[in-house]
Image (cartoon, rainbow, N blue to C red; front, top):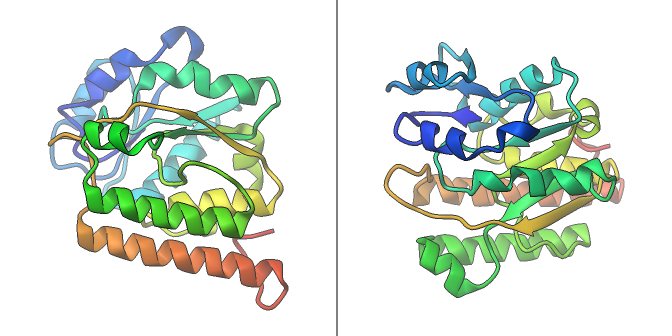
Length: 236
């Protein structure tokens, strides 16, 4: 769980996790100003803290570092903001355990009406659709979205891709997927209900615009790399 000011939702997220399938729950707190750490420790989560805010990507790097120390089979990222249905962790893991996928994404995008009913802002929905279309065309895939924060990885993926070279900002999410594709890993997805509410984390329009541009640059860099014009260290 990459956490930042999640005191109001971390307990609910944890309660929904299928404990019989999980070896350990790790939360990395990115210098929150609230009681996220205290609540997480109270309910039995293993907690690591950043003394200074390292950003969303920097938080994930610590999450994966600590998870890999346990030599896991599968590592699942769940945002502790109660936006995604954490009860579906087992469904996310099953294709990886059975060798049908290396990475699983919990897709929020099935129909426009479903997404809007969950509360996703209209501008965010259309930005998601545009970026996903561009990424599908560039990657040769047909995923319904690349921008979900609910993800499962085989440990082999995280041990191979150079995620420490990725950005500490939100574009980390796209760099890790596109890098994994450059290494030949298989990405699949399942539909996951998602809800937007006041306490759920969501970046504003300005940060989203920066994220969108950084995503397009990552895709462009991948195309340059794959054609041999320019080589980037984050791709194979």
